[in-house]
Image (cartoon, rainbow, N blue to C red):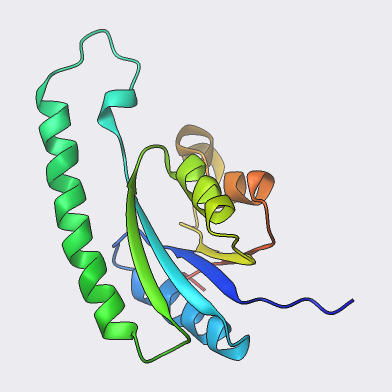
Length: 148
């Protein structure tokens, strides 16, 4: 059985290590002759289970989404020549759920995701988006550690 990888999702967080994840993901997509979909997820502060939810959270989420959309446009433009078709989207919600849902909706063949390199108590507190995506994804997941 021959597996064809034609659509790859690369989640990005616009952190200082994002360029390493982008470079690695685009290189892999190029090897596979795959199209790339970058995805950034803005945390939905409305979803937090708090005693008091301040109305300003909606405005903050909208501001963060607008900023992310501008950065995504730049990311796509800067990398449009590196692989097949390069696109980018911004979603609002819980990162793991949005990445998995996006992969399902777009018939993704692979997700290429970076880790944050956390371990021990920090990982217990913060969780691991990459680890959760591996467990829930509808397709293979290639995990890349940009710190090594």
